[in-house]
Image 1 (cartoon, helix red, strand yellow):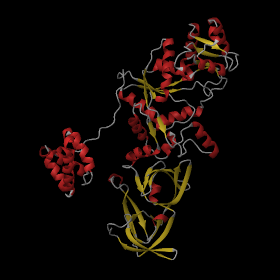
Image 2: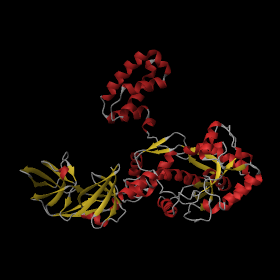
Image 3: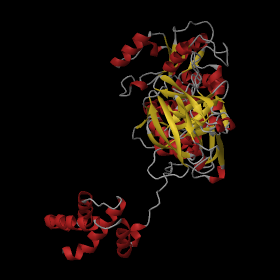
Image 4: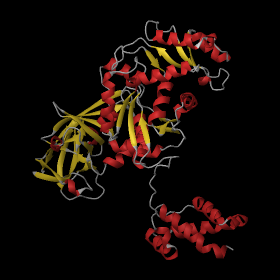
Length: 555
């Protein structure tokens, strides 16, 4: 049996060796062989002995010899399989040209990365089905929205390249909500309740009906009208007649209207009776949307919203929930951000935050949000996202286009003895010739980063090799050669006509400023340019006056 399997085993061992730089591993190979030949489990001892011998033999070959052997035996195993691009799953009952989705922000804070991912999921599906996308401001609690957030949300969506077709502001539709609310009261499906919050909560827990349920339709309508006039906040609410014994507590006579005596940023004091979140959303989604794509945190709201629509005779949209995106190690909470802003007199684009505008300011490419959304998709498996995920995705996008620049932190001046005057020609990007070259004039005076300074040979990148010796507390440098010798440590440097630069590094709740010098080329790059500070990391030029400030993106 083993003789018949020899060729197949050799293929597997060769492939494993090639995949791991010429070194196969018996531990990796044996399970693959047993998977391909289950009957070999009966002779496991012989298989292991055979594999060990083959691994030893094949590992003694050069990588080129291994490749040639596998090419003779199984050339198809050398073909690199193209990585399948992750794509969007099909949605139920989605019809091309008739698909309608929505982006439903509450204008109570600036959007963060979690919003961006959820909104991109909706946007991408709208593109997939050539449909329509609605931006809908959920602003039916006048205590939460602020005027600045409406425009900020529009600006953020534009900045990350999400384009919508229609805008709806829920507070503009109050008369429609009133009409549906009155309909439910007239049909004896809703009633006015004067119980306290404590009484309502207790009866819900005990599954007991409220005596207010027994009011006549006429009395309920009379109270409804009075609520719009002179009834004080908290005296009455309108509750849906649900089932107080329902297993779902949200269906136990939920509140659908309440008085909130506060000024609305758009409506002023035109209205004082406001619909609940679920009531307004149920109507808007049912009338204007075919597919609701939202996070799993809204899963429990679906039965109530469907129930409201059923009572009003409104069709349910398709509702698809995807995993909740948990942002790890970043500030996204509106309350926490407001506290930071108040305490430190900062703004919503502070690079320590995980808001969209903070991440853009930090140098995150808008396309990053799109790729993260595709990766999350509409799976219900919970997703934990930290800055490493964001930066890892971003690096793939910016590395091919980020212009290079030298920067030295805590700079130390060196006069290089015997150094020729020279104009160094350095590629703007090592792999993108289209970006051209940057020219840096040198006169033997250079600046190095304090951490790079030590005795011995050093290659100044794309310039020449020097030798450094320490004499007392001072370092002396001597020119050696312009020819690069393999194995010499390579470091960045800046010339005597350096530009002062501050590297601003977000680290948790702190902002660390590292002072240093940059090569003069940095003055040619505009504010907003994303660059790579060689051997340091990527960053975005945030300002250039009075000194250049670069916000650190990531390694």
